[in-house]
Amino acid sequence: MSTQLRNIVTDWGGFEEFVKEIHKNDDVTVERNVKLTGTSGASRQIDVHVTHKKGPYIYSTLIECKHWKKRVKRQQVENLYASMDDLNAAKGVIFTTIGYQSGAETYAKAKNIEIFVIRDLKEEEWGKPGKIIEFYVQMFSKTILNIDCQNTMAAAPVGTTASLKQELSLKLGSPTTDSQNIKAINQKTKKVETIVVPENQILSSHKKRGETLEKYLEGAASHGLQEIVKKDFLINDGEDCIRYMQIDVNMPFKEKGELLQVVSKGQLVIIPKIVMEVGIKINQFKIKHDRSSNLVYALAVEDCISGNTFAVSKKGEDSSTNWNTLMKNPVKSSDDVLINGSIMKVTTSGFFDPNEVSGLKEVELMIK
Image (cartoon, rainbow, N blue to C red):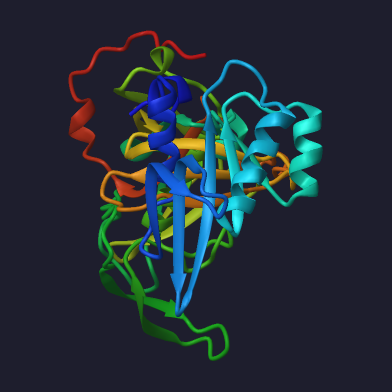
C-alpha cells in the first residue's frame, strides 16, 4: 500500500473520512458530516463528531477538516470556538494538510483548541535506515580441500620394533576422537609406562599442548576463512549467487622455531610445515523490506501547539488506528545502526562438502 498522503486522500470528502477513520476505537463513537442544534437554536454542521461516554457523563469533541491548498486562517478557528460554545462541546480540533497562519495558531492556543497537520512521514521518522530496508547477506562456510604435510619424519615410541610409517589418518569434522596406547618414559620414575592418548594428539608446545591435529587444522581453516570474511566486497554488483574461493593456509612450524609433533598410529610424526588448501563458499543474497508493506496507511500527525508528532498507522487485520509518539530528536546514527546497502556477514560452523567444487573451472571474481 502507498503511504503518501496524496494517494490515500484525494479530495475533501476522503480527508474527512480519513480523519474519522483514525479516531475509531472501542471507547468512542465517531460520526462524519453531522448536523447538531446548539443552545442558540442554530443548526451547525460538524465534519467529524467524536462522543465519549463514561458513566453519566458525555464528552463531545468537534473536529473540522480542512483539505485546502492554503493555510487555515484565524477566522476558521474562531468559527469552531463558536460552535463549541453553542454545542457545549468539551473539545475542538482542526485537521489540515497544509498548516495554519500565525493568528490561527495564537487564537487556538488561547482557546485550548488543538490544531494538527496531517502529512507524509519523513524518511528519518520511519526509524533507521528508513522506510525501505535493503542490505546484503553473505553466508561464509569452509571446507578443507587438501593437506600437504611437507618433509615429515617418524619416530617409534619406546620399545617398539615395528616399521615406521609417515602417515596420518585424520577425522576432520568428527565430534569423536579415537584413542591409542603408547609406551613412554615417566619423567619422574624413569620407567616405561603405557599411556592412553587421543589419536593425533599434539605433543609439542606449539599452540595448545594436548590438542588433536584435527582441531588444530580446523582452527587454522577457520582462521583462513576469517581472513576472507574481514574483507568488504560485493560479488557481481550484489546479485544473488553462490561463489567458491580457494586460499592456502601456511603453517611453517620449522621457521617459527619448533617442529609440530603428533602421536599417530602408535608412533611420533614430526612435521616441519603444513600447507592446507581451504575452500570458501559464499552464498550472497539481498534482503529488501518495505516497512509499509503490511500497512493500510501510515502518516504523520503534527500537533502545531505542543510540537509533538504522532505516527498514525493501521495494519490490515486491525480494527483501529495505532498512534505512536515520534521522538523530537531522533537518536544520532551509530555503528550499531543498519545502513542500507551494507553487508551482513554470517559464518557457519562445520564444513561443506568438498565435492561441491569438484570440476569447477577457475574464473575471475568480480568484486567491488
